[in-house]
Image (tube, rainbow, N blue to C red; front, side):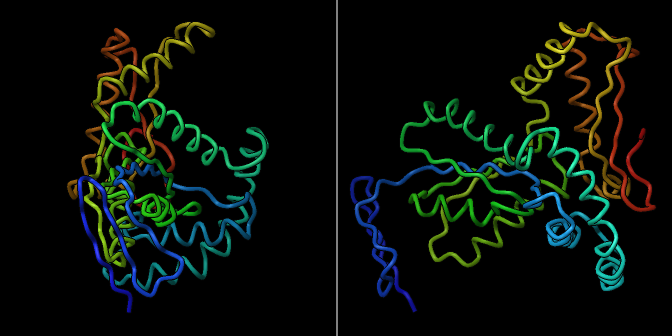
Length: 281
């Protein structure tokens, strides 16, 4: 059993791990860590890579909230869905990956977002700040991101899921993954979770600028459609604020763009299963 001795002197943290040959740090300046998280991606656009990715995703009880007899859902998932859906999903992934070039588009975009956030945010911290990326499903995992920050001696970690609107299936699931990893840590850092930013002025301005850039090239349309990933209606009825936050984002965007009520519309997409999901589709 390892023993950890922690000494703090003038802002310097000395960590001495007994009987741990591969971890020897002394006089390390504490840092603030920022963990950027996203949904995730398979390692490759193939049936073989999609199966474990979909299994991890669809076994998350935050994503699929099955009836009390959870074993029924696991039976359906392992005997039917995971034997049919990976091949179909692989075809769609192959099309997207081919259009974007080599590698996962989501992973590439997330890495570029990480770099951009680091460049923008780092100057506003008074001390050393480190950044890492973690995916809720697939690689690099949230555990990988946390360990990277741990190796850089981060005593305070800010978790920023790249989900503007809060949903239990996304944001809360990220919190689950973070706390699951921290349960095995001896020295748990100070943590802060950012739950949402659906109404943050900078986010709304960024969306509006994206729309304006498109309109400069293609002209102003008769109707602006804002499309959000859907969730089962039951989740909202049970208290999930996602539906309201999506509408609030669209309302603020319309105000920023000077749109009237009949010039924009909120919709939802990506239905799964036979249960009723958020409308309009």
